[in-house]
Image (tube, rainbow, N blue to C red; front, top):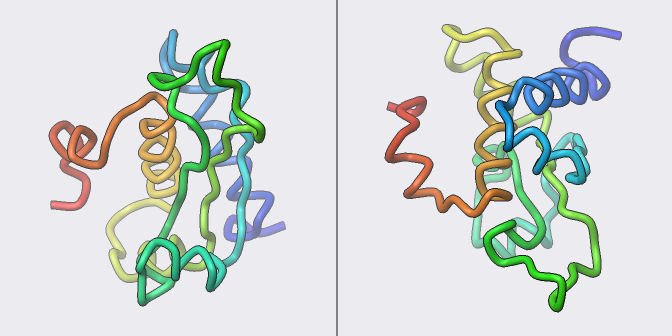
Length: 129
């Protein structure tokens, strides 16, 4: 196993979830973590993304702010990390640890689970500047 394989990514993402402060950690426990090499063509088409390397992670589900007992989700909430785009960004940046980048993408996607929009996240997260 290397630090760039699928299991290493899962381990880094799980460590990020385990490090979330309460009550976020408890709210994250039922979310399924997945790692795929690349986003598939149908997903990219649906999201209107031309370059698959531009998608490093994805939250799929119903944000906690929209859940209710009368509106159950038919599928588990999922955070998917896309390994090859993350590796490409890591190599291009050259100034961050891979674990820090995986943690950043993981936390960003979990923020969507907690009901934050991209604009909400950007207002406090200056990672991309």
